[in-house]
Image 1 (cartoon, rainbow, N blue to C red):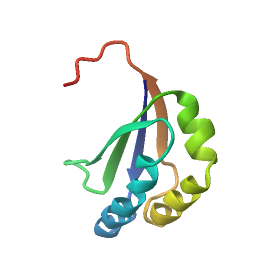
Image 2 (cartoon, one colour; image 1 turned 180 degrees about the vertical axis):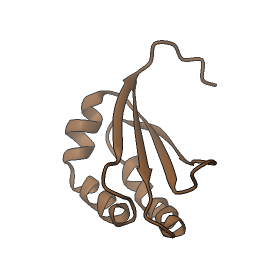
Image 3 (cartoon, helix red, strand yellow; image 1 turned 30 degrees about the vertical axis):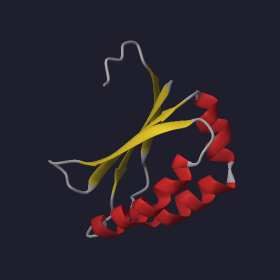
Amino acid sequence: MILEIVTWTIKPNMEPRFEAAFEQAQTFLENAKGYKSHQFSRCIEETNKYTLLVNWGTLEDHTDGFRQSEQYLEYRALISEYYEPGAILEHYEAIYDNAL
């Protein structure tokens, strides 16, 4: 399994709109081939910072599947106006996993 980690910095005073837009956008993730689960979180210390953790079956499920799909374009269209340029996106593979 592959863990995608995205960190966004949201434009000033746009946090509620971003959260509402993400609520709609997450359905595109949930219906993507290879999608396993996700967690969407807001930073406590910097409340305009958000992180998305997505578990994918394979790296290709995300990079070649979802990111190249029409669904991704719709997902991105819903949320991209709210975050600053320079979002950080990285992929990780588990060395040890004791998740419940």
